[in-house]
Image 1 (tube, rainbow, N blue to C red):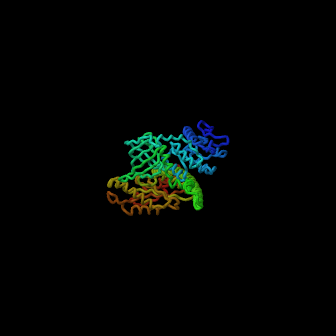
Image 2 (cartoon, rainbow, N blue to C red):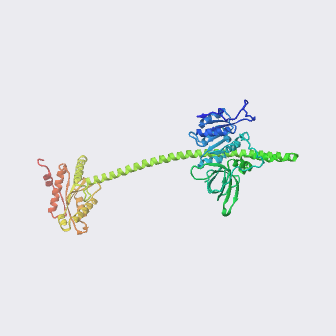
Image 3 (tube, one colour):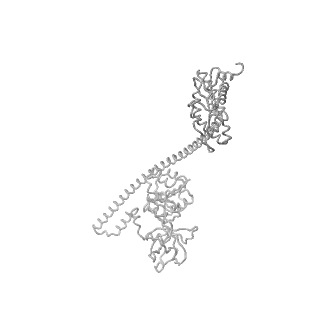
Length: 549
């Protein structure tokens, strides 16, 4: 939404040729603020300065008006909804560089360091909310120059006796005053005790250092709740004992009068008033000699040279700021990419953690499955194959032997006098004996042989690919088992082993038949005195065959 400058009441009177009544070109000002009340206030203040005003609440609408209109100054709010003042300035710098030095920022943000860093680095003029007519006039003069015409208030009549008298009183009061610098709004405010005050000024005591000519904002009296500030100008600083200072500040109209009487600061002279100050100095010089004229010309040339150098420095400063802004944009882009990479890294870390957790769960399940499978296929005491599995192995080896034309050896082994060991040393000692015998049998066979616990103290050994009855294998195992005693917590136990040996043939191709033949040979070894090996005979094989065969 925009407010057009349709010459409301109080607008400057402009003649038919587009000039004010005193013949000067009217100052045309573009105002941008998203607050309608602020727009209305600024319009009234500018019209009081004989300015033609166009106001917009949207920066984008204002930008669209720049190609077809010419403005002497632009007042822009620092914080707006669809575009900030910083973005507006950068857009102006890119598309309308001639307006860079015509922007005056309006802000009420006293705490944002980013705002003041942006303004200070570019040395941009600004007005703090709430602002006054004298402050607005001064800022317009900085941007536009002497074309700004003040609406002069009627001059007060001189008293009858020609003596100017004070129209106010000075009171001694007990109150506090809050003072903060105008150019460095981010610095914390100073709170001091008031010595005396009037409507045109205040004198207070403080520990801070002030200098004559400082522009300040003053809240008097200071309560800390809804305090109203007014503009002030430091006119006197007194040194007091104990490092304290007495500061006199002119307020309101008195501040404007004091500012006009004091010379501007060195910084302001460098920035804005080189030609003006030089002209003021040269105007006071006498013009009755040629030497004086040459001195004036030299001063003017020096002033122009300094102004040109200042313009060049400003251009270099702007280029540096542009480079910094470009680097800042690249840095922001890199930070965005880094943030995206960190986000992707976090996401991948979560995925990896999930996969690791799933893998660990599967490994635990696999380990539990392996343990369950081991317990299902092995004897829990000795760790050998259990009865079901060793018989299954025998069945598979017999089938393969028939297919390949080989023989399978079967050794049926039994510990001698094991019951006596249990009765003498106890069942725990008997378990130790069984585990040790199982380990000795396991170490005494080939890698592809199979050893299982058949039952009690009996063990079954399967020997694949045997060409004859494996008596030598059985004898080696017997000696290995009985070679050394077994040491237990209950004593040293000497053991012996008896074995029955059988080998598969065409007639003995069934597991049950082969096992009965080996068991018969084991029975003969027991009856023959224990600790010996017996081989299955033809009669054992015949007795092992099923009836009718």
